[in-house]
Amino acid sequence: MNKRTFLKLLAMLVSNRVVSPMFAWATGDRLTNWAGNLVYGTDRLYSADSLQQVRNYVKKESSLKVLGTRHCFNNIADSRYNLLSLKPMDEVVELDTHAATVTVGAGITYGQLSPYLHSKGFALHNLASLPHISVAGACSTATHGSGEKNGNLATAVSGLEFVTAAGDLVKLSRQQDRETFQGAVVGLGAVGVITKLTLDIQPTFMMQQYVYENLPLDEVKGHFDAIESSAYSVSLFTDWQKQRMNEVWIKSRVENRRSFAAGPTFFGAKLATKNLHPIAELSPENCTEQMGVPGPWFERLPHFRMGFTPSAGKELQSEYFVPRQHAVEAILAVERLRDLIGPTLMISEIRTVAADNLWLSPCYKQPCVTIHFTWKQDWPAVSKLLRVIEKELAPFNARPHWGKLFNTSPVALKSIYEKLPDFIELSTKYDPHRKFRNEFLNKNIFGR
Ligand SMILES: Cc1cc2nc3c(=O)[nH]c(=O)nc-3n(C[C@H](O)[C@H](O)[C@H](O)COP(=O)(O)OP(=O)(O)OC[C@H]3O[C@@H](n4cnc5c(N)ncnc54)[C@H](O)[C@@H]3O)c2cc1C
Image 1 (cartoon, rainbow, N blue to C red):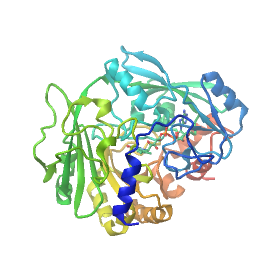
Image 2: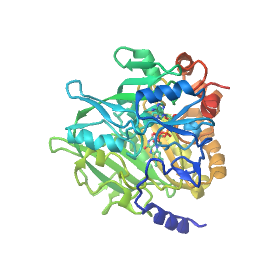
Image 3: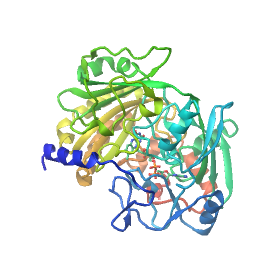
Image 4: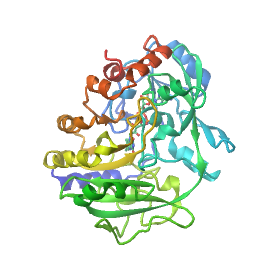
């Protein structure tokens, strides 16, 4: 199928508004992830609506994995035995305006939480490209948005409650349990079943979003820092063709009436005259409002709107975190592969993320640039390409996104995550008999 026909078909699929009830997850009679590229290893799915139920299921089963909103592209959430959903535990437990924190049940999504916070006068510091994902699942994989000064979503976590393999409830806080806490937040589902999270909040704010088209690659080479620091959150979208970034998405806070001064050009790119989808051929109906129209933070920080299919739908994703100082070199290394990756790629996105101190965060102690790939759903082709891309990015110690597709070897992962041995010790303490492990964890973390 040529690219034009492919995009036309995709446009028809994406334009359908989706309302997906909780358990309308199955393709045929099998349970799948969101993208449909993974059939989970079991259809045995429990649903817990209370802490007691979680404890009962954990005690009853010898092997159990928690499913969030199923938006990972690999088998990180998979189980051959039992899956547990905490979707019914999606309440706001406490809004502490004095401490500027909100405590939520682990089943809540950002799409549910954000409008609530805004209605109470509060905001989160950042969001991913889509609001559809669960807070617990997103933080467990170090999901991120963009912004030089913005840590990933897990950096907002200040408290965590989880059920251990023995069925005990553990409460950790950033203030009191420093090291253990830093190890447990990005837990990849290996430490325990998270039942509650406490997140830092701040006064609500308004944002504007502008999109520019055709940013010359030479400008990226010469002015990457200035481009990325020009606003609160900046994303570059590219198909790597024609020596340019197809689109630049600039999200700025409207504060004291001062905001990003949107001129007709931005480092040689031209201000868009209509809303755009990151894949320009697709309808922007699914995307958050652009053209500088002010709106609340949760309707501008994500690229995609709640209630609509995010991204393209039928796709695969992979992403690599490169230490910030190698940003331009790494971008140019991928750009040199343009002819190879072009036929399988839908779009790439380049973002920046601030450093943090969460052990398994790809931004542990290092600010990063992230290079993301939305691929056609062709795993044999993607798999080959990932090997080539990973070879090119290896000199920069690139770390793959935990929730997306990668081929990075367990040996390489060990060498680029200095806290991996401590994480193994920590998760073994709470799960000595490997109840929460699965193939993904056995291969990539525990080396079995
Ligand atoms: C269209 C699309 C756009 C995306 N955009 C971004 C983006 O902008 N930035 C980014 O970084 N990522 C992005 N992702 C990736 C995605 O957000 C992450 O992979 C995220 O982890 C998905 O959360 P989930 O709740 O669906 O997790 P799931 O896939 O359901 O689970 C992920 C992990 O969390 C664990 N988990 C979930 N809940 C719990 C719990 N209560 N206790 C313990 N462990 C738990 C699971 O066991 C598993 O290990 C995108 C994905 C899609 C499909």
